[in-house]
Image (cartoon, helix red, strand yellow):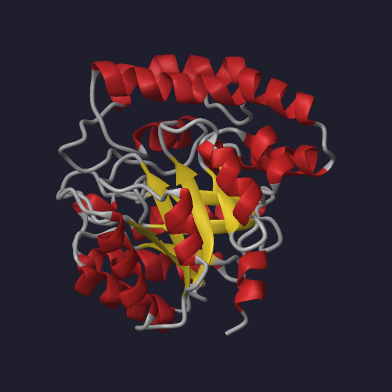
Length: 314
């Protein structure tokens, strides 16, 4: 396996695909998922600039069975065509991670996304062993997700240990800033060894330091925005990137935070509502995340209009 090429393939927009469900029984809406991916491809997302994540946090992995996770991954891979696909492989069980890794290989996924097992307060050694055991099961590329939703974070020292595992080609970062400039230090020190995915919205800083992949939720309803972001970063126009973030992207994240504080918690619910508002198939997230659509529809619509989002429905 050419892991250097795989690392190169990870560069660009890292787009977490919401899993759509049928209203009523909340079964998987395959046609809706396929329509959404075709929309992304029709509006600028290609193998040169994008990777699709199937069954991540915004993809409701935590409410799906193992079989449903594989079903969703299979749909996304089939519809994505030549666009690389990562499969969300977050789990509390190393045995299940091994199964997910083998299934990713079988389906033809390029990557799996792995976070520290949650629920118990695991150590960094637990986390390393979790990754290392899965690396022995298949050749699929591994993206290690450093997130505040788990018990152990990826420290500088753990990142250094992960360089010894050939399959680990990506590091996705989304944490509270507990140590002074730790993210910047990791990007600067390891960008040559991993493709770093900025999920902290520090795009100008991280790109200057060597990050080459960026998670952008806006792409689900406004893929052209992500394409513009990449071009502006590559041109080194960091002031314009920051202006675009403040004027066009931050309103989405502010509304997400507001909903999380006052109504429900989870991921992907605002992506889905915004998709509905631009005429795409949509759904609620599965419980226990509550359905936000009626309560926040008008506020979300106004946010999209004021941000300059195209295709907002009347």
